[in-house]
Image (cartoon, rainbow, N blue to C red; front, side):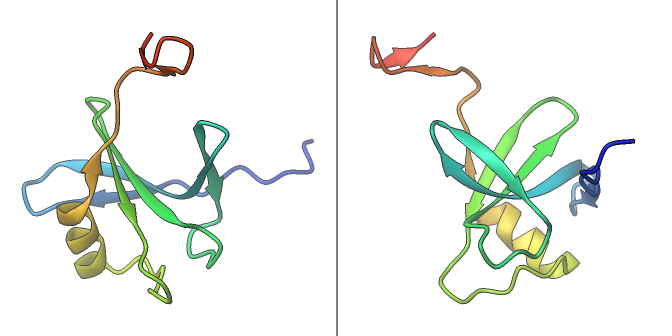
Length: 95
């Protein structure tokens, strides 16, 4: 049995009926690293829907990381879209 716990899967259904998986993360070394939900060290909340659309919301300083439906809806509304292709620093463009 693995010592590390599997991450908790959090799903959120927005007002349009779209289901999103929610992760709290930090971005380093060109990728998002997951944190436990609510971790004050997390810098971003990433939303991923069933079609693979990824959106990212940056927490404000001192902002709550609570998984409150109203806050999740607000964060999703303010979230930017993430690239769908991996960035290649050698060519300064997508792979």
